Image (tube, rainbow, N blue to C red; front, side, top):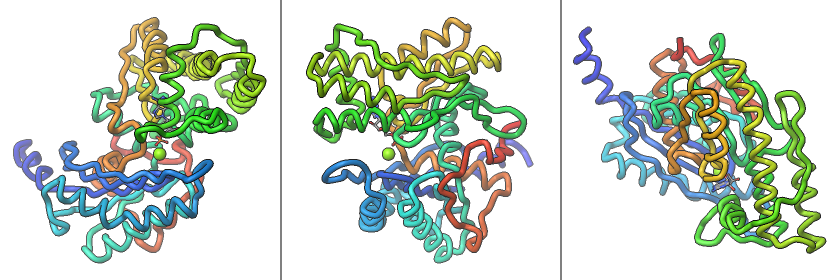
Length: 344
Ligand code: AMP
Ligand code: MG
């Protein structure tokens, strides 16, 4: 088969991907040649407190048909044009994952096309690579539920370092709620903290906990919240200090992974990747190692269906199809348990 023939074949192949690991319900559509045609999403916003898994799952069930139709409209294709359906199989919150999986199974069965279970963390890395052109990066994946430094080594994305307790985004969100910040104009709390931090002037000493290649953020969160409650420092200074400490920790382990692997690219992905201060810090360490710094575009930073659709095309073309009766979700599916045969 010639290259031209190959291109024209993949031009007419589409994967629809469903994301539902936590608060976002997303449906994306990717062409097999890497073009993202749709990335529709509806986020669940808790009335109070953090994500309630059952409430979020109910939200996902309610918006599923609307988001699905939106994605098809955006992509300008019909369900019969789809080649396969992929879905986030884990890791994530059980009720949320099961809702997405149910929608995916129903669609694959009805359309009589293959189902492809995708690892959510792998998808964050793959969309970052697709969108930035990075090919073999050390990746810092920092989101509401995950914080890890990974790089490809012997068939899999290996974890070089990770949080021992809460994720970076979760640390920011909990602090934001304790501080009484609100999701104004739909902005995530991490973004609200980023804005306040810009006005911070004094660096308060807070716990900095890096253990080997791993880190711990819960002590930092407690200390930052305590500083706020004591009202000794303005909120801007606490936000600034929280960011400086937390971001320095993730930058430290990313730098060590880069020095160890001697890779030539760094990729920042996940919802927290939107943070400009984090981007600046990582760029600085990357340049010291003569590597290139890549950050996922904002619309693909937070959880989204496009990344699941794109990873679905990679898995499908390498024969990774998930039989419906084996499509149970995996709440703690680690990235280093997943073979990625599309990388040599
Ligand atoms: P995800 O889990 O990938 O959907 O990402 C959501 C997380 O990203 C939440 O914890 C948000 O607070 C965080 N986030 C989004 N924008 C920013 C930002 N500008 N700075 C820091 N964190 C952010
Ligand atoms: Mg999310």
